[in-house]
Length: 278
Image (cartoon, rainbow, N blue to C red; front, top):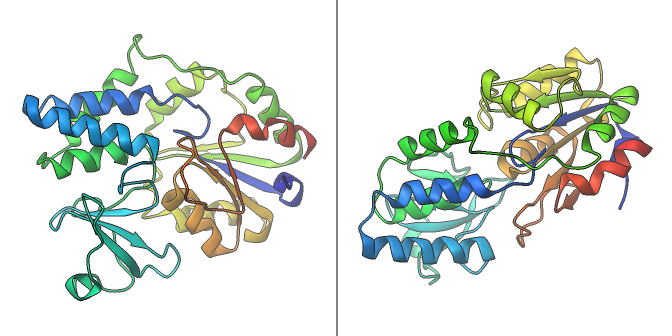
């Protein structure tokens, strides 16, 4: 695997789903959402959710979901035009039935048209399909759970050392949608305090990803070609980076079929030795 760290001056990391591998909080989110459903509907919800995680469902990371029409949509990630549309059961919808619904490029509002960018969105989309109109309370409850002593994260062996080694040779920045208090707590749990030159919270990705990237690149006096973005959400961290001409590494915890970025790896742990050799 090509060591992209050697070719850059600046590395921008995501946090959630990137610097830790645990996915239990996605299941907690699903369990919390399911409490709003009837017992019979819960069974169908969990059946679909489990199949999504296995990669056996029409809903998968890299696609989008149209809440109103209950369509699962494949969108060209760069040009933004719809390529295919399927019903929830996997049946393909003829183009004549949807071609006037989606202007190109499509615009995600994450309410009626949802880009399924990472593991958070699988239970969210399943919940919307089964009639939950507002998943936000369940999401808030999950974030509150993640702030308690009952939630723990697995410290990735060697990651701190790898990042500190990288920091000696490159500019290293953390850019995350999480709030400042969440980030402080997570970095403490992960034993990653003090490993970044800069920590930027509440980044509002993907709406402002390109703007944030451009600001960071200017601040560190480098160029897009000499900047590397690493993250688990193709829409938040990978597509905007490639649009700007940056390098990118896609962390795919679910090991799905979709391939984004210059390199795809299962875990940040796969990159530790490359950080040390940069």
